[in-house]
Length: 352
Image (cartoon, rainbow, N blue to C red; front, side, top):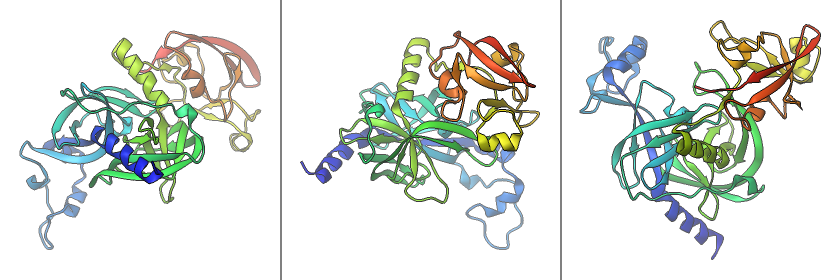
């Protein structure tokens, strides 16, 4: 079979299991959140009309719900289990609806959100649904062909793009919006397959039709640079869900900057490696109150040099070590504080 025919066959098999995830809010709730100054920019306002004081009712459907965003997802269990990105379903005040490939529109329950790997698991009430099988992202090679499927720009359902694996184990800092704090995503798959707004949460599949990644991010202003979360993280989350009914991730409770030579100069630290504990604001302290780090009496400007005997640096940040730990595990930290080094043991908690 030619590569072209193989790609077409994979798309035909995969497409029925790809869904659109619609984000909805009640009109009255949206009115409380949206600044009045923006009302005049809404569609349907005629030139010369008085400045509106309420959101127009035409924005809402018959149930009074307004669509405020969208993303993609894919079915991994015929009973209605769906994988998508956490940032697609991050608003706990919103309601979520899934549109299946056959056009059915069903309410979705958020079973779990993984804030570390940007993965969420949804559930809809349905049966005998088409599914996608998970592959092995560890076997990916540079230049390997992949296919991204999703709901591009929120307008074009069932959009596919073909590309190659451009890079592996990439790290980026991403933000959901201008008001959200940056989140570091590590170990990502880089691809030149077009990933657009709305594609988030859709599958990145290989030419065997197996999911190797979850489309997650694009670089603003760049072309042919997209990123997907390796499917291994989703497998861990699904296993947690089966065993515990939720995603369980080990939690330390530190906000930090990983030091290198550049950051050493900027922060005026005595070393060029380690996790430098720093508060972003009074509302985002370097050490989270009540966390394992707080119980160990860590504080701002501490530098965590080692995690259980392993060096902390830009290639091996604390988060990488936490991914191999379970809540309740013990870890030993080597800490540098005001020129003095000391070791402290912590019992890792479960992230809530």
